[in-house]
Length: 128
Image (cartoon, rainbow, N blue to C red; front, side, top):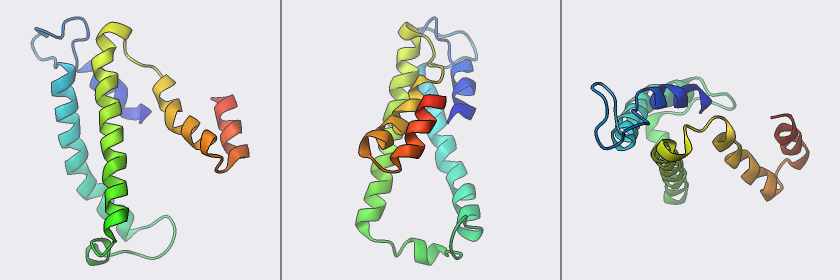
């Protein structure tokens, strides 16, 4: 997440959202362009991870689409939350300034609160 954020913000005119400089985007156009990029790149990355998984055996597209509705809705909900959080972060960058690393801590903090892998999460939060 920290790899692309600075590039998206550099493409925005954070000083003037109403009438951005030529060649610059508003937060709304930036999130739209970014969302299109995520959608298109997903086909490439999803295919690669399905063909060369980190753990387990290869998965074909037919097997992927045989997943149950609950799993797919969970994935879509996660994507919607990520997209909404990114949009809010881009929109707030005009008043609050572009976020540095703080917004990357929220998912980690959520894992910490849920108690999963508590010791490892605690170490990551302290050393961040």
